[in-house]
Image (cartoon, rainbow, N blue to C red; front, side, top):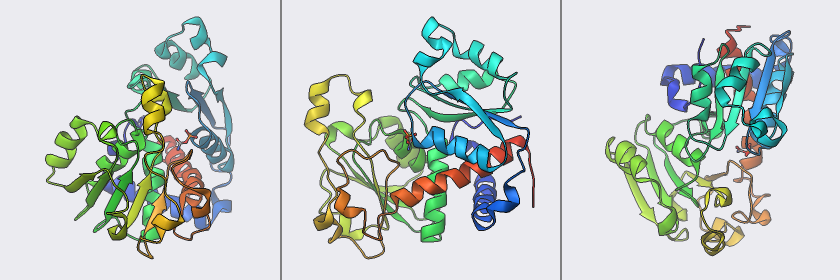
Length: 306
Ligand code: CP
């Protein structure tokens, strides 16, 4: 039995296999439509979600399985004080696999230690969001055709954005990847990531607070929203929330082949006028999230079709 807490739990070879399986599913979804018949996915979400929870559920339904779960701490016995470890002990006898989101960093890891079924971290606090990273990697692989030799801009809340942290950690495993980190000084990447990942791996990166001066020379621009729920005070959030707004004028400065990704939800950081630009791929990215989660569920349940 295997759990997924971090995208790095998968070796580059395993990641390649997962991406290949997701692509085969995209090409021939009918072939996989019954392969999880009789299997159940529990979605235990202690924090709000649209894409992650529903794409997990869509993934299991597309595979012919069933879903059960809760979508907020308030609607589960967590509201009565039940621990995550007790909850997963019980869920282990109701389902075959569990996707868990929790506001506390490490909570899905604690769950995995007491679980008799595979647990997938569906986002833990400001820490990690491995299945978003897998979604991002599938998107990059399909639309760019490679992971090596990419210059990637990350823009917005790089301090609290767990999707940024996970994707940086995943991308440093490839050759000649360079990062441009665009954020207000207060929202720069955490020190552990700068020192422990970027400096430790001799990765080329720059930290800037202005998007216009760097947007013209990137393969990918990964926009993020300012994470209101992780701020300690509302004043700081209001001061920083509109630091960057990607609009048509800024897109005019970018290369013809630069893709715009965003894990969503979007608030103000991408103007809706950008949505029609063929370089804006964030809705396609959300769709790819279903296929990579189908591949992950099959892999963790040991189900082979091909
Ligand atoms: N990208 C993402 O995690 O979206 P949700 O919060 O809607 O799940």
